[in-house]
Image 1 (cartoon, one colour):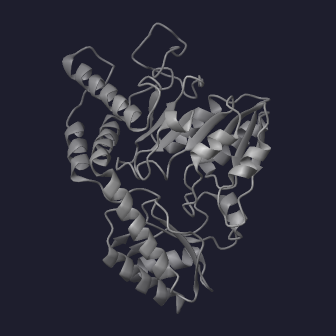
Image 2 (spheres, rainbow, N blue to C red):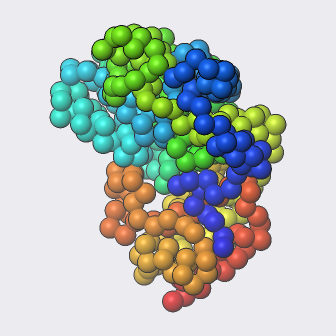
Length: 373
């Protein structure tokens, strides 16, 4: 089987990650919930993972590095926990529903949301975003890489183009692990991370890192192991935003993924770009195939096949050629509206550095067969 659905979830994990998860599963203690040595040891390991993640992304502090079950939960905390009725927000047509749906809910509650159009070529248009931001705009919310096409803004230019007081909240689901991100250097106030994609963690791993300019309110309430006498959530982070038992194996996997990336980052980045370029070159040789993406660092190639719906194409690639891709709208309906592909969607192939040139050759042959009927 050829697995080209890594933008949905990473299909390949380094052995070091698998070994770390296996070891974590053998530990039955609950971090931060008991005073015995095993619980304390697990708690210390969670804190070490927090520190690793904050250092990797140039975060602001360990305490403001919150573990979540996925990027969607992180974005919900950043948006629902920070924005209030009367606030004004600018976002883009490239966003995933993990941004659009919380913002739709907030708009129903009195937050003013404006959508910046994409450029004619389907890129995230920094000038269009900046033109919509006013002195009283509370936040700009933007993806660091489109999950449909891999379109990516220069985040430093965006930060420079908007007022200093405006918060910059970034969806890093497709970008984290693939390109270098330093929150302090880029002026990012909140970064939502998906651990199970480019970070090589397992499903159930995610994080939110945020600056001192944000003080998110809890979106969930429950036990924290601290201030148990207090019926309100603690005032300090990370406890204020982390209630219930943390996903210890997932956190360990994410930390191990960070260690792997620190040792292999440049080679992984360069290989993924090389493979993605080869994939686009192959697609562009097929007369009945139209690519809607360009070579990028995120492993994403989106395309349509003349006369074949995207979901039908994805199904045929799976059943006839044992290839895993995704068809449809990819939970990004406004991006497809901007691209003019809302009716039939697009086929998305998404690569990992663990894929090979041979797999791309076989994939192009399969797509050619599907396009020829």
